[in-house]
Image 1 (cartoon, helix red, strand yellow):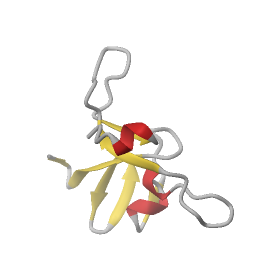
Image 2 (tube, rainbow, N blue to C red; image 1 turned 120 degrees about the horizontal axis):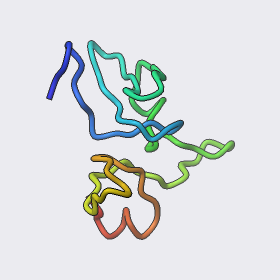
Image 3 (tube, helix red, strand yellow; image 1 turned 120 degrees about the vertical axis):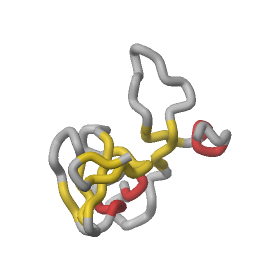
Length: 86
C-alpha cells in the first residue's frame, strides 16, 4: 500500500513501535518521524547490545490483533519469534 509515495514495510520503529514506511531508499517511522537509510537502523530487528550482538527482537505480523493491541506489525522476542507469530 502506498500513500504519497511512501510504501509500508513489515517493520516497526524501535523507538515508538510505529509503522516504518519507505520511499526512495529512505526509511521513516510514520509515528515519530525517525529516519534512516537502512531499515535495520530504525526497526526493532536492528536492536543490538552494546557489544554488537543482536538482542533477538524481530518485526512480525501481529497474529493476535485486538482493540488493546491494534498494530499490524509488532516487535516479538523469544518464543513468539520461534513459534512463528507472523
